[in-house]
Length: 70
Image (cartoon, rainbow, N blue to C red; front, side, top):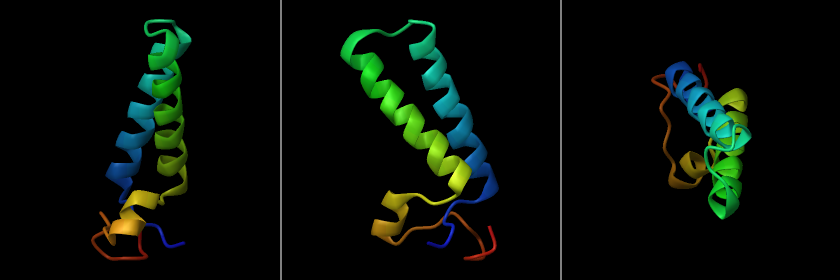
């Protein structure tokens, strides 16, 4: 798959995902909410590292100014 996230988008995703993971790891959030936030945080980290967002791909969106150059 072609990358569809620009570098700023990727950094924000990784930082937000890490923040959500920290909330779960430090037990600020517990129970079902912790599981949900952990999953969302993990997805954000993976998509940020890989540079491909499945939802963007389905909707035909891209935050890259020049497709394929991100």
